[in-house]
Image (cartoon, rainbow, N blue to C red; front, top):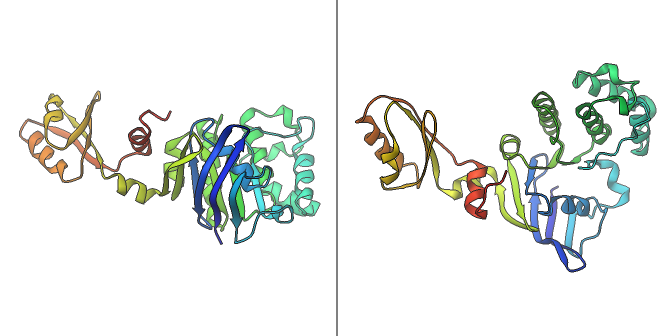
Length: 299
């Protein structure tokens, strides 16, 4: 019951947008696509949806190709928003819900629930153009989920939202996952992917450079981060065996170390020097892993 992308390539003339991509996206999970503009994320989504044809390879969901007859089971939030500005929210969502095979009364019930969920019940009869960008995005999100899809594809759903709206959207995505929806989304925000996803793929130039479960990706990286806050100079730590990188912070330093065993020798070294206020060993962040694999900072 998974979404499978098997050796998929998409070329536009001489330009290869997606290059031999193979992924398996588990059912009822949240899967994150990361990558800068032009990495191939949106092209991959459009091929999954059948909006454009792959040049080579195969995409299946639940063992079958995604055809027009199955699109009522899928929700899609495109990166380029596409609401009708002169229509009221109600008329907009009724129209889109009817296209998905819903009855008008069922659309209104679901719409009422979602507007309450996003704390904007007063927007039912407002024109889309009267809403702020963030609230337009909420309506666009509702249009993607109004028909309770089994597979939901969200292209940059959090871009342009303020922190309060980002949290509301995250909570909605988590609730949909809990109800059994398979969710695939792209983002520029590594911390968001880290927070929401159990599985991920980082794309660069159309290729998957990192993919798998978040736990496995971090475990295979091996290296750890060590954060130390102390009342004395910590620069001497960069010379200790197993310390790969040191970044001085206002409170102390962040170290990248070869493995967690190295932290014990560092603890012994700082313990002799004076008061240590904070000593924390953490898994590497996705950004750490990206810098290592790609050779540049992601954001």
